[in-house]
Amino acid sequence: MRTRLASLLATAVVASALVVLGTTSTAGAADTDVCDKFGAADHLKPQNSTEKLVVTVKAPAGKLISGYCVKSGSTNQGLGPRYFDLTPPATSVTFSYPTDVSGKAKDISHYSIKYVAATPKPTTPAPTTPAPTTPAPTTPAPTTPAPTTPEPTIITPSATAPTTTPTTTPTTTPTTTPTTTPTQPEPTTPAPTTPAPSTSAGPEPTEPEPTEVLEPAEPVVPVSPQNPPATDGYGNFNWNWRYTDPSCYALLVAYPSNIPEGQSNDINVRVWTDVAGEITLNYHNNEGTWSGTRAFAYAQHKNWPAGVKEYAVVWTQVAGSNYHYGEKFHQEPAKAPLTCRINDDGDPETYDLPQAISDIEGWRTSTVSVRKGSTAPADSVTVEHPGLETVTLERLRSGTWSTVKTVVPGSRTTTVTFPKETRRGRFQYRLVLPGSGATTGATTETFTVRVR
Image 1: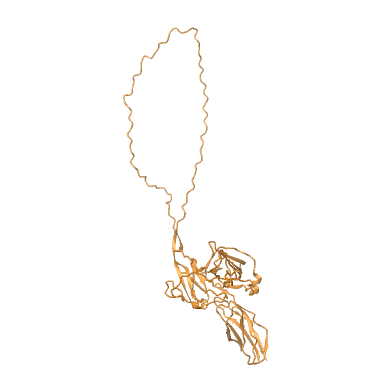
Image 2: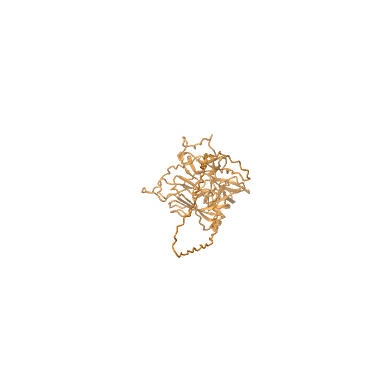
């Protein structure tokens, strides 16, 4: 599997905005060794082996999930209840119990879910104003008056000055005068009139139906507790602080309480996918820096490609930490890509849980000869993504594989020892890692022991 992935990894980089699954919260129950029930009658418990590792919960109709609590073991063991607030509340959530730095999975003892009501919020469409219409300007046609020529006046001078003055005057003066004085009419107020209803066929205006949008009834403000500080031997901030290795559904980061300002607002996860090659998912906090414990889910990222069936988490970068998953770290070799696959059950209403592709590396397959009464040399293997399962050493007897012993996988390497051989002949062994809903499981090839 690793060889096939290595040949397919490409070099595309895609940036993105922030998508955050949740933050830890200090709110809890009076009994600090169990989760708060958040008003429910009892805690919820895993129903099968898959839910012991990863749980998926969908909110009922009319509600949203605003937080959850998950517990693995006792508080004294460091496996007590862990509280998370979702920002923003969601219709579904997938989670597991946070692993330690070694990356070893922890089984879930019980959990509880916190809900808020999703209330309808009416939205009124913005009013529309008709565009104003401006009448076209009209220019009157120019008129040219006809030219008028005044009649000439001819004055004829007299030969001699006049001797008499004309005495012709009007003999009558008009005596006609108006006998009535015009009177101004009294102002009158017209009676109000009610216009008759219009009988035109135009449509009557109708109010648009409001659209219901579900939103949380009240804002959920995440509360982040203080994680332990990261300090070096001189009391300064330790830039070599480590976070847990990625899982197949999210990268979980517990930020140290003393992380410097401005050093915790970026996360980069490089992922190879079977549909888009290699992409880089960037989670950036535009409103400040993150604190507490946060889970960055890959499938909730806006740039996560549609239709992914198989993928591998290749490399991660968190804040200013010198530790990067997928790179050498001091004397430790680089960790191999976390290979995952999604099994689609064909039902769009159900969540298709991603599975980590398990593997057992370093298993001896060549034949080894030993004397009767001796044991074959021990073997050292690396078990990748065992989940909560143990490895079984099996021996072939009369055509049937039977269990010899079980071995708990180590965080780095696992030593397998063999039984004493009491009979001569050829005997075959193999290792089997059972699968679950969260891991695929793995089976090695056979190893043969020849007893002389």
